[in-house]
Length: 122
Image 1 (cartoon, rainbow, N blue to C red):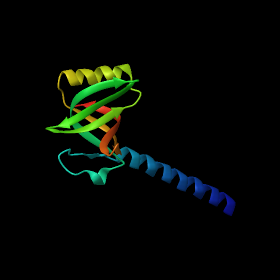
Image 2: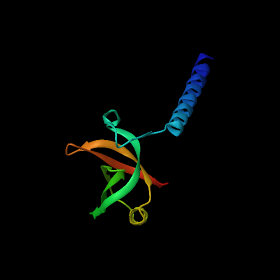
Image 3: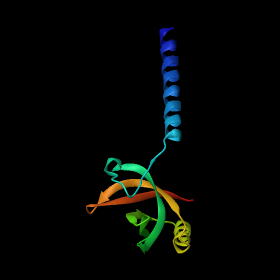
Image 4: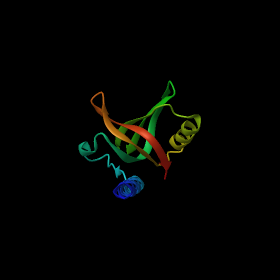
């Protein structure tokens, strides 16, 4: 009797834990960086940066570029970019359209950089 109750309790607690994990992952919203301010508290976190693209350079299937908001720019990279993604971003760059990037805000060669996970045209 106690064994059956314990098994049911473990299953119930596991299901609740999984549901809470799914709920948290779906409702988590990344912080949007303002490039004109100090963002050191966001280092090594997933953030959103919106602006215009500049200086696109494709090297070994990796896209290096800058995302700029007004006159302030941030270096960014997309590793192993697909042709479709590159076409979309290049079109966005040529048409000077605003875009939002989501990625890890980090330091590379003593400078802030965004390692982009995905993007969305605005």
